[in-house]
Length: 139
Ligand SMILES: [Zn+2]
Image (cartoon, rainbow, N blue to C red; front, top):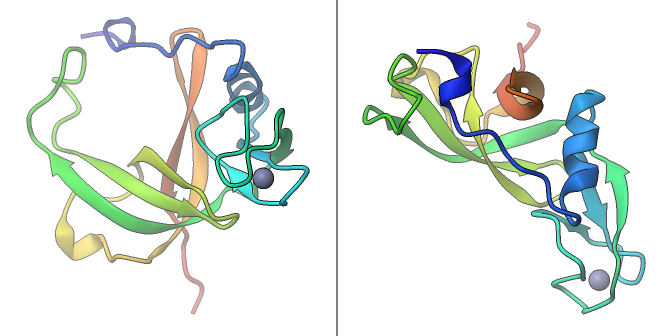
């Protein structure tokens, strides 16, 4: 099983700045110039106030674990990865993002809701995907 067997995201005109950002090691989200709210997934207009053409900003990459499942039934290309964690994380800026958790065992005992996370980037094909790992809490 090779990485090429996994589906690779195909940027669209609306999502291209996001995928250009991940290649630069940046997690980019949109921010509405009218109401100031952060927006993810990428859209041509603000879902909160309807203003067109939200700007792009670089998110901190910090997030909290909102919810997750431990997946044991791989889709095509993911057979060697199971079990793995599919998560919803809430970015520090507000939007939620579906992602994978890495750097932690896929074990409910290790996965605490609201735990602090930070973005990491993984290459897949000709794209780079944002994933999240637990932040090491210094005693
Ligand atoms: Zn707005």
